[in-house]
Each structure stands twice: as structure tokens, then as C-alpha cells.
Image (tube, rainbow, N blue to C red):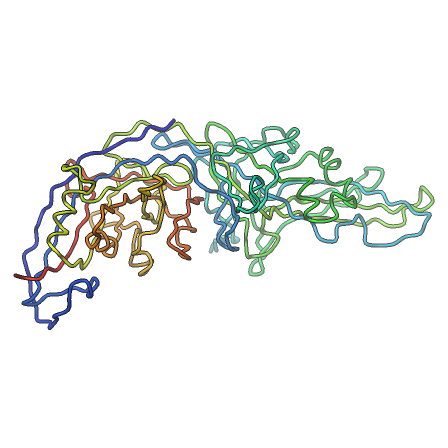
Length: 531
């Protein structure tokens, strides 16, 4: 079990910039002005540092399915093992439905009644195209380099393939009126033994895995021909790298091949009920974590799939070979998918380190405006600022990276959202910070490096601060900070949805004075009507 680390120190208000003025004619009431900066003989401007407190936030589970998401929003699906002593170990596995191949039949030709067609299974394997970048070399032929791989690529993780015993559905089977959802801590249900030909397959990503050969065999099992298999893009003839996991031909023949023209393969629904999905289960003490794109737009050949190669031998009169036909079928890993993240254990950390780890790792929690010493349900500092009747011009939340912890996997961007406790049900409601709706780019959260080499993340949240100052209730929700996931920026409504396929991680410094100029801070720039 993960242990939640709390940080209770906070910073006193510090007014540090003197009043400056200009000449702008304005007699409007504060509440109608928004966050426009005002500076004249009616208003004065100033800045303050607001008390904040950061703590580590436990993440028990996140949603990992693609249900109710539009195409292109599925994200990247992670497979493999990542082990870093500063963070939680992650074993990431995938369950996907399998799409029935179109026009599935052993042969598309008709022969006489005295002929016999013998179908010989040549090979069957799981194809996993990597994400890769073509590199043009002046002194040699162009090659691909692999992208989106994290961890130790010199160490193999263990991969096994299983048939799923779990029926995946877009509707909750216990309550069909509700949309189904699947979470990261729900382990897969398997049936039967592994489907890969080599048990505990040692998986190491390799950019040179671009070409392989298929021995075509006729009815007497002799080699009829040898095919060279590769995939290329429309813009380059350079073979594209992909992983190939050999599957157990005998098991596959019984499970798939012998049933091609059976009722189980008559429709996608019948097939989904018969073969409920393929599980890619990764385990091991260490290795690499690979992000695979299951919705690649380059072409069907670049999507993960089960590939089947077989040869039909057409025999007349029991002995004479009339024809030999090469055949292949592709079964894309498509439909409903979900991930299983085996996390832990949690590392031992000090109370001044805020661990942000993607997937189901950990997040940070931020309390604004300090303590409630009079126990009236509202921060004392927030109460004082409400009495000042100020107009917020800007509000910058700045969080520095603890660079004493390796940051080579620091997220390019973090995301901020709200955790609000419903006073009636006590349920925790998660929603977007209103500032993200004013502009994703101005909202911020990007990783920055200062001129002196310091790394930090900055969020602009003037709308959120104005909302708190203008409220007459005890409304002051905690803010949560996480590694950005692509679905975080789906802003169809105010509800925040806890998906995550981002495996990146970073350690942030809290608000302790021990962190000096790199302590976490919230700086508010405001205008105030002069007496």
C-alpha cells in the first residue's frame, strides 16, 4: 500500500512590489472588469505571494479503456516494465478485442468435385509495429530509430499472450443502462495456457527487426517457396521496424484456423463472444516500457495485429497437384481495449519531494491560502483577501523540478485540475480549472528551462483565484497536478476524466523555505480601488 506523505508548512503573505500608476479612465465596478490590468489614480496595483501547501497524492486507479472516446483520443497503449528506484515500478499490460478479418474463407476459387484443398498453416505471429523516425544518413543508407521507449532497452521483460476470459462491452453488464468503464487495477482474466510459441518470451525492442521470411509449405509439408515480409510507408522504401511474437501454431490452428468458416466466425459479435480478446501480459524485474499506437493513420499495416500465413494445395485425384495458392489473413487488435498497470511498491521519499508519475503512479495535491486557524471552514488568508475587495489581474503558480532526482523522463507538460468534495454526499468531484477554457496555451504547464538551467512548470490561473475571492461560501477546492494525458484537453464539459497513458515522471519541490528561490509559490497580481 502506498503511504501518503503530507507537507504542512506554508508561507506568510509577502507584499513586495510598490504601487505604480498610469492614466486610464475607468469608473466601472470591479466585478465587471474581469482580469484586465488597471493602473490609474483610482486604482493601485500590487503583487502578493499567497500561502500554499503541497503534498503527495495517492492514486489508486485510473481509467484505461477507450470506451466513449472518439477515434484519435485513445492515446498510446503501454507494454513492458519500467523500474526506477525513485518511483513506483510499473508493469504495463494490454487487453484488446480482435477484429474479424474481412471475407474470411480458405479459398476464393471454385474447383471440381474430384479436387481436394489442403490448407497448411505456414506461420502465425503477433505483429507490433514500433513508433519510429526515419533518419537520413550522408554516409550510409537511411534507417529508422525507435521512439517512445523508456527504461533499460538492454534488459528483456517477459511477455506472454493469453486468450481473455472477460467479455468486453461498451455497456455495464450489471446495469446495461450505464456506460461501462475499466480501470488500471483490474487484473485480466485469462483462459487456457499462453498462446505464444515460446513460453515467457524475452522481449527486447530492436530497430533492426524489419524483415523476416515465411517458408511456404504444401500438403506434404515440403517447402514450396520462401516469401520475404516487410512493411514500408508510402514515402520510403526503407523497411519499417516491428516486433514479431511467434504464436503456438497448434493452439492457433485449433482456436482460429480450423473455425474460419464456422458459426463462431460468422460475424464480429459472434467472434467477440467466442474469442473475447487477446491479452499481452508483461512481467519481470526490469526492462523497457514501449508505447504502441493502436490507431495508426499511416495504414492498416502499421496497426498491431495477428498475422496468419498459410498455403492451399489443390489436389486432383488424390495425388496430382493442380494448384498452389499462397494466402494470408490479418486480424487487427481493434475494438474495445484496456490496460492493466501493476504498480509498486512506493519509494521512500522526504516530505519536501512531490512525486508526479504518470499512469497509476502518483500526483501532487495543492492547498491554496493556507490554514483555517479559526476553524470556520475557510482559510484565514482567503478571508482576509476577500475583505480587501481586490481585482485579480494575474495569478501564476510556479513549481520547480527537484533536479537532484534524475529528470530524463520529465513530462513535457503537467496538468492542473480541481478536487471538490460535495458537502452533501462527501463524494470527491473532479473538474477542470476554469482557466483552461480561456486558452490551453495560456493556461500553461509546459516544462521550461531558465537561463541558469533551472527547470520549472508554471500555470496561469487568474480566473480560478477570482472565483475563490468572489465566492461567499467556503469553496476552496484542492488542486491536483499530474502528468498531462491527451484526454485531459478534451474540454466538452467541466468534468475531468481520469485517463492516463503517459508514463513520464518528475519530482517537484514544495513550498518549504529550505528550497530557497526554487520553492513552490503562487504569485497574485491585483488592482485595488484607492480610498
